[in-house]
Length: 308
Image (cartoon, rainbow, N blue to C red; front, top):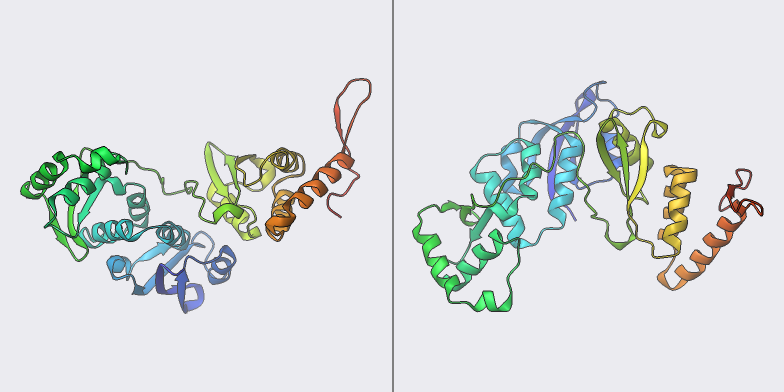
């Protein structure tokens, strides 16, 4: 679903209206004429929407940051979206790094749209400063109405187009995004796995089944020449046992690209046939690995081509 729509200017004075989030293959196409050293830089010529992000119009931006921000927004409910846009518009935030970090710090913001119900005001503020949690007993506690009234009387509220905004200083700010490598964020649903690529003290994540361009962009952000220069490990697996153990073997022994191919194949398998797919993978794994009768050591048969 489109979260950000903008007309951008890329290398070769190419102007195009793009809906974000978009695929990494699309980003590859859009930036193919950009200069070396500025491959990810685009100029936001016109922001079609949302209007709460209008401050980024007329600025140079990293297209990967723009896309990641849109992915984060894609999972937001109405309250979360309102908080982000209220903060972005009120503080005229142009820095995409800051905007991305806003998405990880929404607990620092309480946004009130109905100031007539003190109980609801108090509950919303209570949940914001307690990590979004509120038991039924806490929800009904008359103290919430007192807290709501105290919040409104504090005069700390800032009027925005999205409601009355309060900054919760008691909630610490977390700099989750460092401006270089993106934090892990599973946004593709249950069909998605997460693989960590580590290099030079930094970590990037890809989400098989993914495009080859996603892997290439991750390596660029890490400053790595190839996957051979990196440590790769499973971070989150969509596969249950015993398939997840076999997938670990594929990732560790055959590499990320082979693992990605298998994930692409698995994504096409209907849930009703997943057991058959698991059995097939286990069978092929048995052909690839044999146990030395004397030592009990597992021997990898490199001559066998997986999933012919």
